[in-house]
Length: 103
Image (cartoon, rainbow, N blue to C red):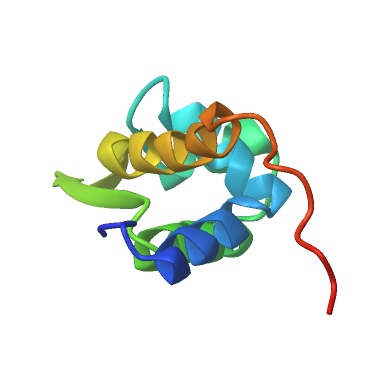
């Protein structure tokens, strides 16, 4: 997923705003994991974890790779880096220009 469009970035940030999805992404930043790993690590029900993984996949934040009878989830580091760059750009601009007068 390219997050160049403002709507795409906003949607991706909204997806990441859910605490369990954020935790899943945080864990996937360290290593590729399958659902069974996340269920155990998060102490959460498998259907709930699968739902959050589906949302992350549909948002383009993770991809999947089959490994035998298991499916591993892989963080799309390009998308995360793109989001981080967009956020960093908000704070990297010049000092405030002041206020626009009201009419």
